Length: 410
Ligand code: EPZ
Image 1 (tube, rainbow, N blue to C red):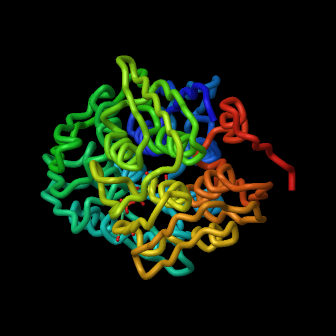
Image 2: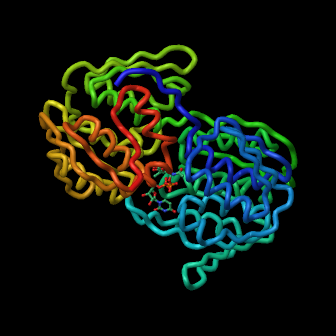
Image 3: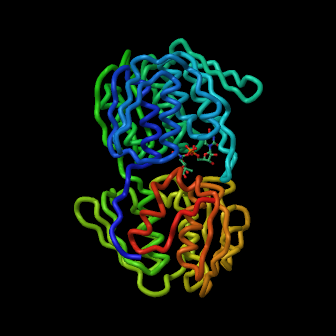
């Protein structure tokens, strides 16, 4: 592979910011939004709640001045479990919210206990109604101090959203520090909220009475998409230029790629270049952890890269309890991987051979593409709908930098 890839806006930033537009009793214009299935689903949910949505290319305009419902349609909530981040915003704006319990998925149970416990601490009434529906009500949420057992990204986002209209001050301790949390704070403050501390692990939110304005906000670049394409170039011994990235957001990813032997440079204006010559070196240990550690969302991609390294690597997944399922597919290519609980041991092999594979989750699917690109012969990957949730037209992007990949209608 060789060429230039412009990195799109971040899926995991635009989704919570779209949820936050519900707090603005006016019009929010979002720029640099990626064109992804999950973003389409979120737009459908906002429309179902009464928002007027206009999409022009990578710009989305949301007018949330006339909300008409506080129920998130079950079919949409089931299609995208991360719709749960709408909970706090609808509750804050409408005083109640109905949503179906988000199910687990390929990578884990994905419970929402921390979300609900925090909202109850703020005075909300939570009814886990039968047949999987959730009803949360609160006339007026009360600001309070909340300690998260784990720096959950979604729980941090939901509390920030709910606290915007709460009485008094809310403090979140052990908050997630991801860049997407900082982007959410930036959007909300631009709209008139009063939040500080995002990225520091302790976030303070002063409740306000109303947010009614017209604002424009540019979504931050997608650090996981950038890391995925850099890993693909590294795995195939290529050279790649990615533009529009925030170098600080991908520091831990670049650190691992450098340790594998890639030559990486970065330039002003968000340009990062990668050169990978010859066989990559193994990594004696990679442990995923909350930001700024090595991101769990890059774990499958780095494992795919390590299958061809000159030695044995160990990857430990500390964030999700079941995020190695995709390795069963990599074994079909001839990879040598053994998984025990949250630890994968990858012994590098000289060659992988193409096979028919099945993607069952977004980042696992990306890993199958990376492995397929390094394999001899043809690899066919079904379940591309999972990959489309997080990567814009992945086959077009990769073809433009020399990959032999095409979408086959199944
Ligand atoms: C966000 O999911 C991301 N999704 C995930 O990206 C990402 O993997 C994850 O954060 C971790 O970085 C979006 O932003 C839309 P968590 P989220 O709450 O918020 C446990 C991708 O591929 N937990 O930080 O659901 C949970 O089970 C996706 O783009 C509880 O136990 O992640 C997990 O083990 C995949 N109780 C851990 O915390 C709770 O109430 C981290 O989850 C909440 C979470």
